[in-house]
Image (cartoon, rainbow, N blue to C red):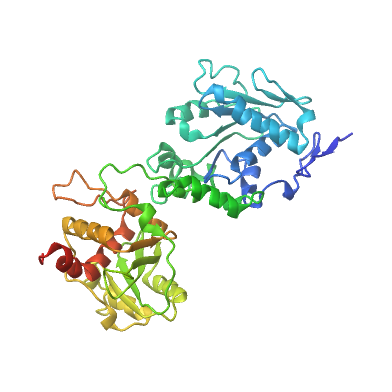
Length: 457
């Protein structure tokens, strides 16, 4: 006879030796791919409060009731943390889901075993001298907070997944991204796109799932957002990691913008329909970047302001970029500036990049306010830091690419030129940042020279 049991909270139906059916009210819908994945490699990453860890608790508790051999190794960097973290999480979820009475929880060694079929969840701390003992016949591994481990830890565990006595083999890991320099970024994610799976290495065997607090249907998301913002206390790197679930940026020991202060220069900018827009472009295919600004006619003094209200950054064509901007700001007067190279790069029929932009935006060529050359990095650095110190300068918090660039912008100490900005086509693309540099040169250089430098450079 089949034993049917309905859990107290999740409305989860379990049938012994039969396919398990999970009611969709038991989990957040956006996290369902984690619950159902049998991929050889499963990487779940993102911000705090997304519910990904609880989804793994449910996923592997349910797996204990499968009619085939299932033995999970659940991992913590430190053995001493297993009881208070994963083991207590499994126990809490089992009680809430009504599964507890069907399982045996061994409080001594923190194993969890199905009473009838012998399927088991087996804990391992990576600091345990006997960390591979009792790991024969393992069919799956899950390491929560794998960012605390090393690449060598990952490879040594992965080698344990070799038993033929299984329905599938899986190495799953979950983490909040700490740094874009972390080995997890390099191993599991595309070199070109930090959010996409590394198919060059893993092919179709790797599934990457991203989530944030917005994916958790069981919390008050507005209230939790305020909690995370309070905890960040103006630290934009914490906002980036904990709220946006994006790769963190390591501390900058040689900042290019030494006057940049995220608590002062990042905030909420209100679009002013009566003011024109100033668009600044940097030309690269990956990405093509445009930052969108509004500013007062006067550069300094009471009531003056310079606000970056929006950005469009991505691998898009000029036509698509212009269409996006027109759709957002259909009635605005627009002026355009940016990289000097756009004046010489032709798209055919003697049409430069800037002329194509003017056509795409439906503006006159007279609204193109361009420089004959780009400032040397040393002059550009002095200009930008002077503006940051003396002017009412704010970047809207939605401009995540530009904010990240401002935080990580650093001096290239290997370059012989003074104050040269570190740039590459990897972690330091700096395209949005460059568009800001060009805007400052076009609209602030003369004012700063006259007001603060007292000389014309």
